[in-house]
Image (tube, rainbow, N blue to C red; front, side, top):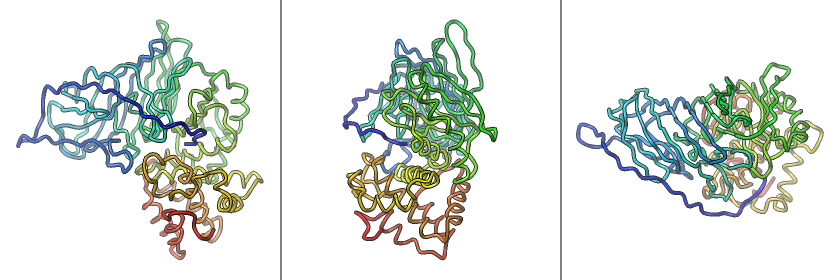
Length: 469
């Protein structure tokens, strides 16, 4: 993610519909066996849910921009990781009309973002099950702890859904934590003349009765915060790279000229990134270029990043690098955010170096000497230990995270060893999750003759500016 503006922090007042449970399922002793609300994230404790592993989302959605109304049916396939008489889904706002589990009506109730489902029959550990949720309403725009906007963003001609870190629960129910990745199929119906763009590949498009339906398929595991849906008027270009990778680029007509200019470098950036980070992890690529006012930041939505206006080369590099660092290799928790942003920022340094600009070493030294002139909070906290959710996307996560990567590069014998390490990392955790402890252990295993303790102690976890660059 690349934040281009800092917004004034505000508090959103969110209303949840509370429906009483009509049936309580318990174990043989009368006790409820619940999966639990929240995946235990240190900064977003209610994000995600316990007791099951989501495997696939089938979302059937219809959106009316004039009424700002979304109706949907979410069919979620999951595997129980413990016996369950109840489990939770994350859904903020919206009205839930009906819930079924394995085709049988289930009772449910609401408490804030938690939708607690009680199936008719107890789910056994290891059992694969399908929960279906019918819901409707006006999706909410969510205010992040840092003040930026996500969730369902209303635009002049439609809507734009962005999820990092918790906004996806504003428009579909699920287990909304980075650690619970799944495949997705989205069927989206909108007024004829509008386009619905999502992740993955477009598998179908049909128009009837003044409405057009788009069918999108993502086979590779995807964290819910990088799922996107853009509804509006777009100029769409479908093509392939010289290597045959399908590209789908959707550009708002007001950004068309600039968008064509900036995105002509997309195949070149993709090839450069593959040379640097290893094989591209997804079956297609592309971009969504919206109006600058619709979103105030770019976001690494999987295989099709979103940009607020036409991106420059470095921003394009940043979001494409995220396809490896953040989308394929996804942080285990939000405290591990620097593994995404540090690598994506360092990709900008490497690109500039390879383009004949400042070397990564020169960028590092300039940041160390004068970084506070540009980033007032540069040394305010270490990248591996943000003080709270408010700082998850602050500059130390980006810039100091990149400095950690550069220190590792410096420590290794040569650049071949560095790129071998990076490509080994993206291969080892391809389509999975990894945390900071996984990364530090991996680096030490790959270069056992080197001592990385000072990097971890001073640069990754140390307070203030390290004594020596």
